[in-house]
Amino acid sequence: MAPSAVFTAVSRILNGKPKWPHYGVDIAAPTGTEVHAPAGGIVTLALRDMFYSGGTLIVDHDHGLSSAFLHLSKLRVKTGDKVKQGDELLRLEPQAGQPVHIWTGV
View 1 (cartoon, rainbow, N blue to C red):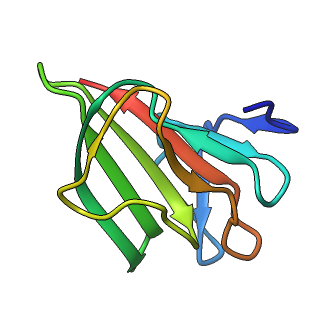
View 2: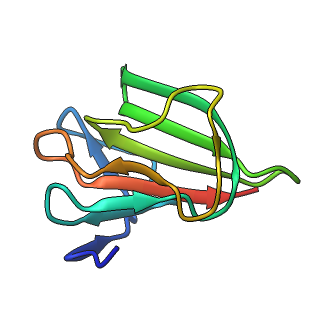
């Protein structure tokens, strides 16, 4: 994926009010850009509309490592799916005005 812009936050604005910062990376890329699994694992959460994060996908890579993808509108996998490194997880179709947020960590 070749992002057109990467945003990191010192603080964030939520509903017009300053809130705590987050520690992931926000990526803006053209609609339709494919996002692939950074490592194999099991999809532990795939929901289309969570209150704060919209479409949300979490992949458990085992050994305490997970990846999360937030602010999505279309998912290509569902909870319980096994994925291999490089499998397509989603195509970017960010919610209006939201860059896609990606986090991988322990």
